[in-house]
Amino acid sequence: MRISQLFGKGKTVFSFEVFPPKKNMSAETVYSTLDSLKALEPSFISVTYGAGGSGADNQTCRIASHIKNELGIEAVAHLTCVGNTREETDEVLDGLKSCGIENVLALRGDINPDRPPKNDFHYACELIEYIAARGDFHISAACYPEGHIEAPDLVSDIRRLREKVDRGAEHLMSQLFFDNDCFYRFLERARIAGIEVPIEAGIMPVVNKRQIERMVTMCGASLPPKFTRIMARYENNPEALRDAGIAYAVDQIVDLAASGVDGIHLYTMNNPYVAEKISAAVKGVL
Ligand code: FAD
Image (cartoon, rainbow, N blue to C red; front, top):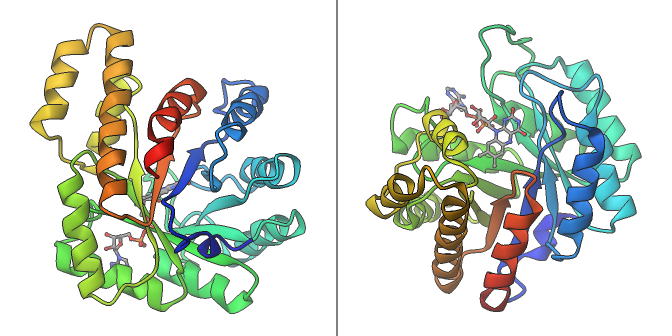
């Protein structure tokens, strides 16, 4: 199923993101995580694609295929383009197609100084156009409620986003944010710019302090005082930080659902405990 069909049915779409196991992790961990996530009945699950290109061992494809074919849940495969040639991109897309995957999140990927770009694709909009020309995938794209970190200003950022939609993106998933007002202002800018596709809000629950600090430095999300108070108070108490982080994410989701957002995309960080707690708390409001 093309995931756009999930929207506009009177319910808030609730989807999850997982990542392939890191080098030092057993491949089995992600499969047991997925078993737990299945019980939560997400609308779909997306699988990230290694920065710098991981087409060779293609874990994203294997995990997406497991989600779709073994668990019976719709899957979205992320795909970045700066690190791949057109031939490599086709190889990944053909692999996904042969596994029955119909949905791709088309991304540029972060520029890695240690891995020079391959120069076939420079921006996500070029990948989107390339995939759209093939005609065999539903295409999603990334959006940034507070602007992409490299964008000179919010107006050019929205212009670039509109370009992605014009070239074939049918659904947008947002970068994480901790201040819902940033998301509402972004939605307003996007709708004024004529972007009418469904936009899912990306929510990342706090799992531990170090990880959140890393994410925030990398993506530039602003931290409301309510959030920093939690960090300061519980930073040395991992259980309390986890519980407060879950409560914070639940609070964000309830407010977003009540405001009628199209969907919530939960960055699960492969942590089924956190996903279970959040799902149980928000089930009734979606
Ligand atoms: P683009 O849309 O290409 O934008 C990148 C920058 O270029 C922006 O500043 C934009 O304003 C600017 N720009 C766009 N077009 C032009 C143009 N024509 N001329 C000049 N400037 C332009 N990374 C991974 O490696 N793997 C993943 O699985 C992954 N999943 C993600 C999922 C989500 C929901 C999000 C939000 C991000 C994800 N990322 C992932 C991170 C993403 O790769 C980075 O944020 C990357 O820096 C930008 O990707 P993009 O697709 O948004 O790029």
